[in-house]
Image 1 (spheres, rainbow, N blue to C red):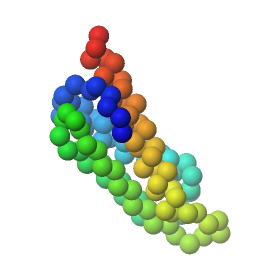
Image 2 (tube, rainbow, N blue to C red):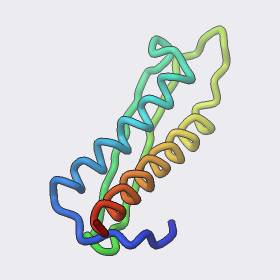
Image 3 (cartoon, helix red, strand yellow):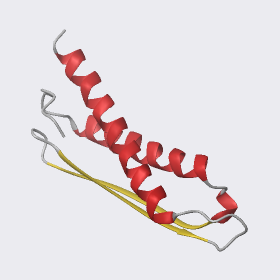
Image 4 (cartoon, rainbow, N blue to C red):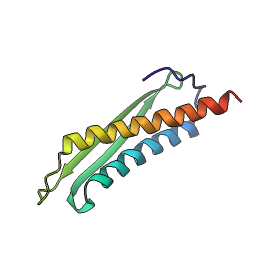
Length: 100
């Protein structure tokens, strides 16, 4: 990810960033496959440091066999990308607010 120029993040901001990323990934998965098809959905967002901050997103998805075939690997990759997109938007917002 590119350098955005974010100030040191507070613990509250880091917690909010993790929640936003987790919600974005979960929303993406549930928008693409019915919840009754989901056997397991675990989303983990970990951070290291504050400046620069390193964010790791892990999406674990197991689907039940069903009438419609869903590609779990593709869904997890796309959900992870959605999480990182939401992280970038959040960090840009913080960077913009810190320059005011």
